[in-house]
Image (cartoon, rainbow, N blue to C red; front, side, top):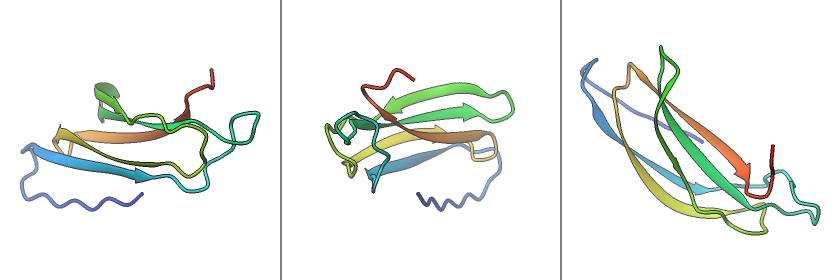
Amino acid sequence: MHCALSFTAKNESRILRVKVIAGIDLAKKDIIGASDPYVKLSLYVADENRELALVQTKTIKKTLNPKWNEEFYFRVCPQNHRLLFEVFDENRLV
């Protein structure tokens, strides 16, 4: 994933638009050789490692090449916040 941002003021908050488009050749996590992937996005306060917001995409069933095309909006302060992307399989316990 690639993200390019530019900000002019250090402490001003901005709206960050994130579009989760697709996954390509994800790991096989189900017994039948597919996966039921979704993406979780967590916004953190960097210095405190405190979660401010959590959103996730819909689950795409039985695929290793999911297409989500979902947009999310976060109010961020670029100097203080970090965004974490994680891909999970819906059926996995761990």
